[in-house]
Length: 276
Length: 145
Figure 1: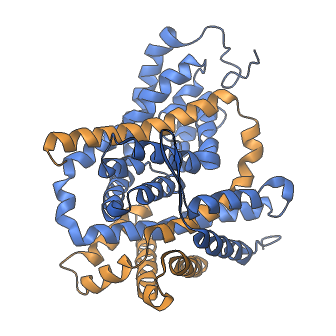
Figure 2 (figure 1 turned 180 degrees about the vertical axis):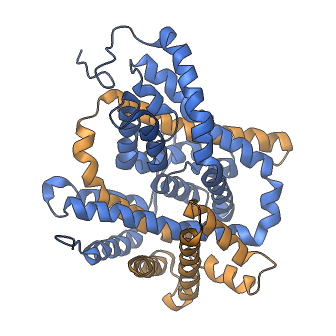
Figure 3 (figure 1 turned 90 degrees about the vertical axis):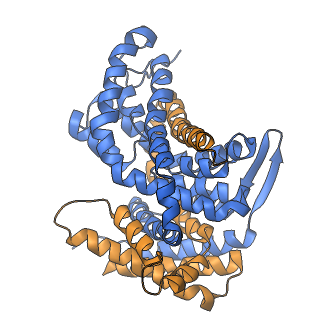
């Protein structure tokens, strides 16, 4: 029925070669002035994979790329099973960290808005700012925005923009961020592990992986706490988004926009497409 | 059927990664990978037969926790087998598939304004940094570290 069926085995084969090659190269730590940048197989795999899928090369069709995105979701599920299996043997420890789990979840929710909204308004974004900053804008969040404001709304454009950036360089950025925060010495690996559970498969894998490379002795703890935080996020995430994050962002927007919002940037120009 | 096969193929790739990158012999990783695949499949199946919609991640996490918790039969074997699979060996295939899917968003990205790119980075930073900071404060307050 499907015209031009996608050959999934082509994708699996490329991934197998990428995994074998990048795991063979292994982990490298590069010291830069402010800290250590950890380079490790998953990052090479991401970059090489990205190069292979670069549209100009015409090596993969758009359909194949979409299928790769689906398989990415499935492969994340096995990762999740591994994280869960890490928690089981020490279940009591999970109950003992209930308070920190709830509070860090608030950090995840508040962080996008508290950081993002003022900057978005200062840059001249109008209602795009609501969609762009109310959450990390992964698939479920995108669906919430589209359902509420419509696919052609300014809010949806903002959310889609952050979504695209997340797919394209979210994982790389998260691993750099994890490296910098990790080697800053400001935070305990356990706190960072919780922070790494941002609610996106590839970004979380990259951030957690970086931390595991920087703190090899804490690898079990990192898997434990990022797994627990991710579970927390997946249970409450959607509801919090609908009933808390979105209304709060709208209220804050109404309040802050007249104060910070730049009069010069026109609201019609999707996210301010002005030159000069 | 297709997804079952996909799970096992990804498992096989992780098996190779675990061997090359973390020097765990294939036969030693095999039970752990199979158990992970089975737990994942049970979670996916369970989500499907439930009469209401729920995130599959929740069920897979819970089943994995249950199967390795002290009161579940065979938990020690399950936990020990899965412990042989390095977390990073499971993460590399994820990002390889992520890489292969990147090309589809390149033309969309070219239409974005630089402002939304900056906002994205700030949003990514905010969620990671705030959650880390909040957790750190609670742990410090509790005297955990």
